Amino acid sequence: MKPEGKQKRKTLWTLFWTSMRISAFTFGGGFVIVTLMKRVYVDRLGWISEEEMLDYTALAQTAPGPIAVNAAVLVGRHVAGGWGMAAAVLGTVLPPIALLLLVSLVYDAFAANRYVALFLRGMQAGVAAVICDVVCSLGVRVLREKNWVSYVLTAAAFVLSFVLRVSAAWIVLGALAVGIVLALLDRRKPA
View (cartoon, rainbow, N blue to C red):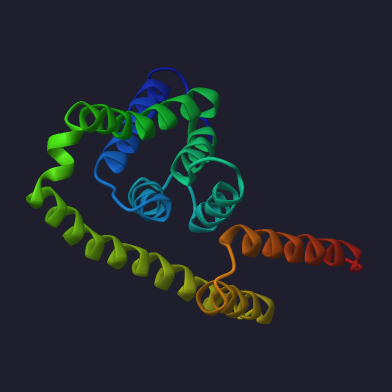
């Protein structure tokens, strides 16, 4: 599905520009940006399916580095190959780099400003709402699967994370191990 010629340049520009806009207006970390990426790349542009976005989210979470950049690599490669990866990553990293550069130049005034502190505190509520939206969207998807393994993994991940305060990295590795075992067992079943 990789575009050719003039269409490829247009696709690369769209990929870069949408990645930059998503990144520029996303506060709160990787899962917030993944939600916005889903809305743009799955719902609006139709470049990837919801299932692929969920897979990319899982891969981006398990790979080292920022989830936003990892997801941009995967989506960019899927849409337009190596140049797509470059366009998506560049679009994703430019806004935070520019913002951090600006903040570092005026850090003393920025850190002491009461209104900036209040603004950031107010943004926390918005970030919480977006993360809640992600959880609900993914939860509905798991419930639609009607797969008891997904139900058990979801409940176990919640208990381990929220109640027992186990690191997300261990939960992801555990879910990965379960997925590998299930894939191996599925391969052994006769066709």
